[in-house]
Image 1 (tube, rainbow, N blue to C red):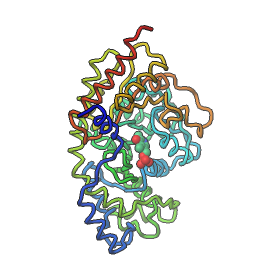
Image 2: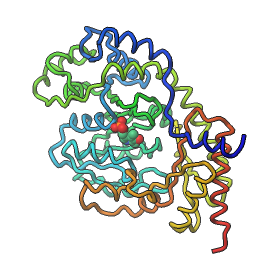
Image 3: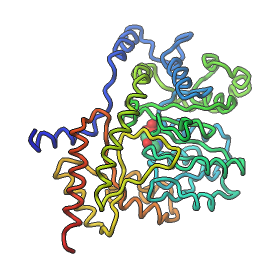
Image 4: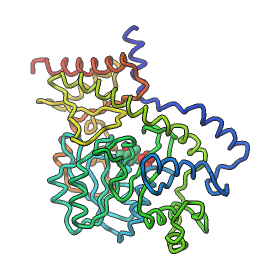
Length: 400
Ligand SMILES: *Cc1c(COP(=O)(O)O)cnc(C)c1O
């Protein structure tokens, strides 16, 4: 294969997961009947079946499918019934949708530092978790799990509820427990660049019947549509008409696209982990690149790789590395160096003036991001790793 052919193939890392053929049968039946709304059928609507299957898969009591993970995060915060302006601790390394969900819920995001291993800095977390904090939203950014034992111990001691943003963590475990089942509510995304691809979509899981009932009603289970959700009848009866209806429901079409992908999750996790570890091993042989190790107890489900430029890199050298990798057919994002990046906290101007997060800023200026979709072959992976190592060596081996 010529360099050009390989380059074109590897550049296609942005294509999403293909949808299994089984989805077509369900969608065709739906188009014939026009039954697209989750609450039309008396029972067994695709969205309801998805909720039952997802709850069973993750080992949670209740699941609620919604329009996006952002909607799930918003509803979770609303369900906690926090006072207007409540302070919610979130990691400073996450996607802009996360502070946005906090703002949407009339709360105030408080940023906590994230270290060079992409995980919450526990010293800063402990320092900022004071009496002014009403809730904690842990965003497992790019599927990196922070020290959930330490976080839960500190929050439990203060009675502070924890919500998990597990948008990108489907299939990740912490000491054998599914990510998204550790906090009070776990939220997942079915947006195209996540492990399960529905274009858009989200789901939240919880074992708390009161939180589940409040989320379900606020998602748009108007009048007595809540009767189509299993269990919870007393909680619903209490909350009906006392909560706003935000209408963030999932449509049956999305559920039909998602359900046939659920049996594929385990395989995607295994392949994604193997792909990631293969490239990580190759990058770690290079003195200028470092893939930080996972925390003990964490089993990851990555569909991308993050690594740091280590040693004495200037911004210009980092940009030259990026350009060199691109010439070799690999697109690298350096979170802090691309203009207007939605994962760099200083671009969240909608928050107004926020204190700087120097640790997170330093990480973002040297942290690189490359997608590794599960469909990549061993040859593709070697091509990507080779291009990255060569691009780094080209820049850093030059005399200053
Ligand atoms: C994708 C993502 C979100 C947002 O998910 P949507 O379904 O697009 O709203 C939030 N947090 C993280 C960590 C994500 O990766």
